[in-house]
Image: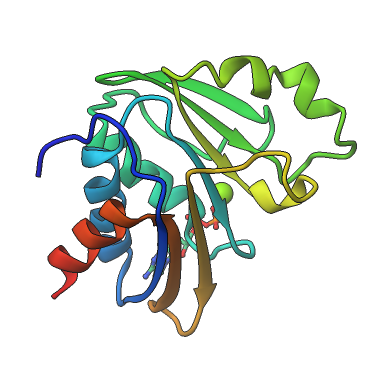
Length: 162
Ligand SMILES: Nc1ncnc2c1ncn2[C@@H]1O[C@H](COP(=O)(O)OP(=O)(O)O)[C@@H](O)[C@H]1O
Ligand SMILES: [Mg+2]
């Protein structure tokens, strides 16, 4: 599939099951391969749900060659792929004001792709992600993955899954 130039405004959601880390990585790569520049993503779900693994896949799809690690201790990491990527992890966020210090909203310049783990730690309506992914552990290697996104992204995901 070709990379999208922009997103349509109609939103849809779908629920998938990942049966292995490889499947989650593959889903990420699919998403990373089609998202337009400036795309903002919130990855949600408990510790070990697979947010960082999905972020790695997204970066793979964005052509990032740098190593993608969980930026937990530093809150933000920048990579360079076919477009710049900012990877936030808000797990250790103590005050909402910290995201202003991190420059999260200045970085949202319509060009850089923004991936935010624990985006749900911010007050409702603050991040307004284009794509929201909620991962849930359902077994040793299985994860329920809920995606809320513009309709054409959901279509692309469903096409690959079927
Ligand atoms: N289907 C799956 N999808 C994602 N991760 C999985 C899956 N099955 C097992 N895992 C494991 O769960 C862990 C997820 O870790 P990570 O991506 O760092 O989670 P988070 O960032 O949500 O805390 C990894 O050790 C990974 O190998
Ligand atoms: Mg993580």
